[in-house]
Amino acid sequence: MAQLRQEIDPDEAGLDPKALDRLDQHLAHHVDDGRLPGFVVAVARGGHVAHLTTHGRRDIAAGLPVEADTLWRIYSMTKPVTAVAALILVEEGRLSLDDPVARHLPAFADPRVYVSGSGADDLTTRPATGPILVRHLMTHTAGLTFGFYHTHPVDALYRAAGLESSVPPGADLAETIEVYASLPLQFEPGTQWNYSVASNVLGRVIEAVSGQPLDVFLAERVFRPLGMPDAGFQVPGEQAVRLAELYGETGDGGIEPIPGLPLRGRPRFLSGSGGMVASAYDMHRFMELLRRRGELDGVRLLTPQTVDLMTANQLPGGADLRAYGSRPAHDESGNDGVGFGLGVSVVIDPARTLAPSGLGTYGWSGVATTTFWVDPSRDLTVQFMTQVRPRTSHTIFRDLKTLVHEAVTD
Image 1 (cartoon, rainbow, N blue to C red):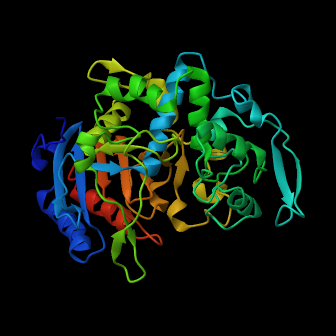
Image 2 (cartoon, rainbow, N blue to C red):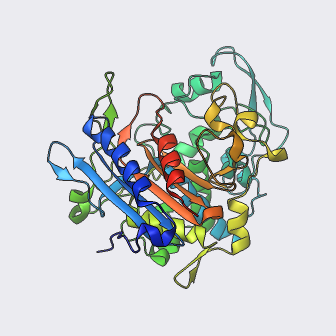
């Protein structure tokens, strides 16, 4: 069984053991206070794991501990994986970043853009001046949105269409994409950044181009070649005991069990936006693919140039997420100094970020408080896994970055 292990001592990797102890103690305090059930944190340099800590429970009621091989719902950390899958097709010449999405998904042939109104009865729209392109999906500049934002009339239309959780009850991916396509865009494609259901649409593009279901394509072209044995959209029966329980934050700052992704059995809806489960070992392998610019253990999935493109800011004029974001949803200080590549965020101005970050650091997070990042300037990769859906934003990611930064000695 594949399991992440510490490979070298922190000192060998230019990491301060005392600072890493402070990191562990800080995270353990969240567990001891009942704000997290348990966690795994791993720090690697040059591809070698130099710090690996597990603490707390993967299932509190059952008394099961977090272990190195625990399985986690990674939610939106699925998006970079979907982006890599799409880029494989780009390199094969079967897909282009500048393809109109409608070339592969005809339902998007005539997109319309919101003009005014607050509901279906008084809504005014106009034809978009240009098509939605594949690159718009990968950069979240397509004009799509999420139903849970509650900041724009189009968000309300998503909720009215049954998209509060991004998928109509009982629908599969193809059926869901048809619903997305029937709704107006918030803005002209390519003119703003709005985190959205775009990666679900990208997943459907992958299906249309490859002729395979998304889970099959990812298994055959990404997971198996990279040696990610537990990554996927379902948890087979023999692995179920390793799956962490999902918790939600309560009003008093505690946590309680809540329903999670339907992972026991193949899901009807294959979400390229947030449907994956993975172990820390799986995520380490994926981060290594990116850190090594497309190659791992003699297997090359992407060229270095493609990974460089994926992990460079793609927002026009070098804008960051706050400046280019669809307001008010993204007008927040955490978006200062951070741009967006193809499926990952990218630090473009470390002096303006809330937490210490190297220039060019890229990665992404998931709604259950999972995160990963790769810092090329320090040859550093970091991941943190737990399973709590917070009610509001919290500081744990900022603290994590600050404490890891303090541990780097060279």
